[in-house]
Image 1 (cartoon, helix red, strand yellow):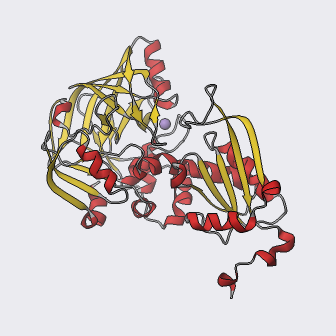
Image 2 (spheres, rainbow, N blue to C red; image 1 turned 90 degrees about the horizontal axis):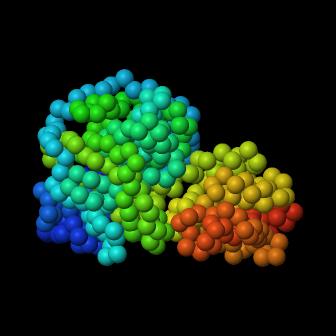
Image 3 (cartoon, rainbow, N blue to C red; image 1 turned 180 degrees about the vertical axis):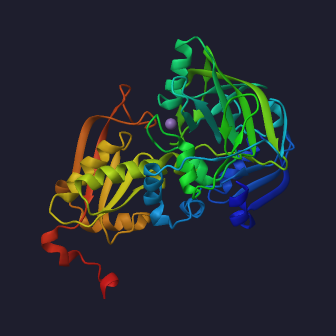
Length: 423
Ligand code: MN
């Protein structure tokens, strides 16, 4: 995180006033949705809070050393070309002790939340069978000074825990909080279960990523601000939630696994990274890594795809905009089907011509306004499986998908030409 702060630290909005971790801090973060914010003085902790490290595509591009429109390609390239890690160092520069969450400025965001939540914590674990390392970001609700209830969706960490529980064992883990956006983004990519997210991160870092070896668990983590060591307990479940998810609505309360913490390592001058639930940082981190999946699926169907974006207004989850160089009539409809199939949570997708900038919502609206004829260009698919985060989905998980083909008909292309762009 420090190298990244060297690049953008001067832009930070620094709040010197004393604020509480309960609601006050989150309310300040809500007032500055696109800023890097540092809260210097928390009532409950000596550690400052930092938020907004990656709440814009520009900051993410800076961390990936590319331009905004190249982010998708950069992620695809790194997922396909992971770089093995050879640099592993020790815990120099950290003060270590017994884990005590009451020392950390963990925020309580909204009144109805189930408790304070760690929102930027990446969990590192090893596959009990293969030893392959996994890194994934999870929300963790504080239920004691050394205990967390953790939401684990059925992906790699879930499988590791299942394997450990079948053996009657706890799963050793480390939690890292406070890393640069590129490393954080790598932990949210959907790579195979036998691949290592840190090797994707290492490609983002041109092979220069150095990990830190933990002390009480057999694990290496990125040089984070705060490192926690512990175990996910075999067979134990606690109520987790309510928590405000991506869609700015409450997720349901579930019985989820429990982490028991043992050791804690805090960097000297550490800052605690907090991600505001439903804020742009949350949306981009969760949504951006899905864009390459959609891009690849669309490219199979229409090779002249130009760009794919899960738009921020659609919570970077439910809405996609795809631009293509249309070559044959019907391309738009095929793109709709490919995109909806590639990201099952996708609800609405709009396809536009390559002269439309998919990163600009006004451009997309312009395309819908001038190039759509409702009875020809709208595809409706009822009864499809949707996102569990979609408040409009039915109790059985189905919803209606809509595709809008906002590409101009090839036969009358001239009529649709944007004069101000061409003359
Ligand atoms: Mn994995």
